[in-house]
Amino acid sequence: MTAKLLLVEDNELNRDMLSRRLARRGYEVVFAQDGQAAVDAAAKLAPDLILMDMSLPVIDGWEATRRIKADQGLRTIPVIALTAHAMQGDANRALAAGCDEFETKPVEFERLLAKIEQLLAGRAR
Image 1 (cartoon, one colour):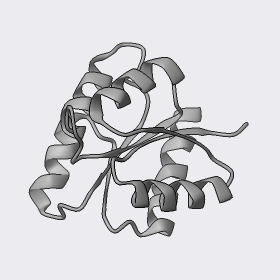
Image 2 (spheres, helix red, strand yellow):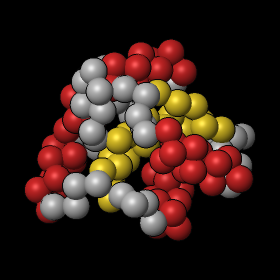
Image 3 (cartoon, rainbow, N blue to C red):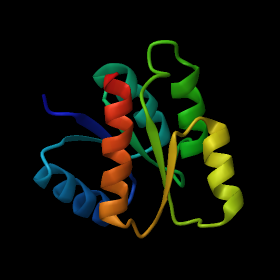
């Protein structure tokens, strides 16, 4: 079964590059371009995993993640924070908001892929 990933990214170039690489690895990739759209898409599409940019319009990734994790039906969906902010406090802030993992931009694709596979394997148990 193909895993469905929700890629939440407002930058078209980042979204295009990452989604093509993930699709080549066999993932189905769906999109949201702002935090509110991410919350709505998570509820509607029930993705297997969410890649959440933290700097988003409408509501930011931290708030979108909090809302997703507060929803009883969505809280088990793993969320990986994607951010250009590489400070130690940012990783802690993302984890405190409910993210399961943290990856800095520019994304190191193989490391991100390993985190995706690990979280999906954990969810399958």
